[in-house]
Length: 269
Image (cartoon, rainbow, N blue to C red; front, side, top):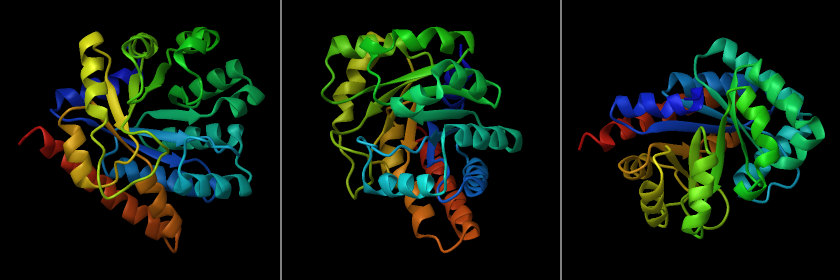
């Protein structure tokens, strides 16, 4: 049982889905990310997901693309993300997952990334553009560090791909709620439902649903079915439009608290 898997076990024991909160690390600068992580933890986030800024974020919508540009302009690199993780780990008790495209991690060195991350409180990684079929070279280092691994499945994933991804996910399975890129919207796609049903049929791995979840109503609906709810663009949008770090932190905490309350209500109804 990895520390990442334990996040979902604890939430389930409390009768709710886990709240996974994403921030682009270094947006708009590294110290701000630490403050924002503290705010999300205070608001009830169960897991903090730190995104490594990358110049070609193909799976991300405009909100996170702009956040990535701001983080890169601030000079944020992989080593800086790990230092942010260290400081967050020292200040709050919420586990940290690092999310990245493969290229920055290869440049940094996978073995070094795992070793340095583990020493700074990181409990797992999601390499968004590494499919299960190409993951074998990355698994031994993760296993040695007791890291939770996370793989993606989408509405287009067939049962064979889902089985493979679930078998390799020692943390949780990330279920993309819809086709396309990240970003919130007024309506929630229900394309995740058949994928979730297939996952439940072939595996008992925890499943968190992301992409397009931006409101308490969305979280309440997904939280009735999934083990976790991933919110990213909604939080990053708060960072983008706030007039100050203090203002952003306060709104992040309020928003996280509302989402956490919605998850608590989802299964109580």
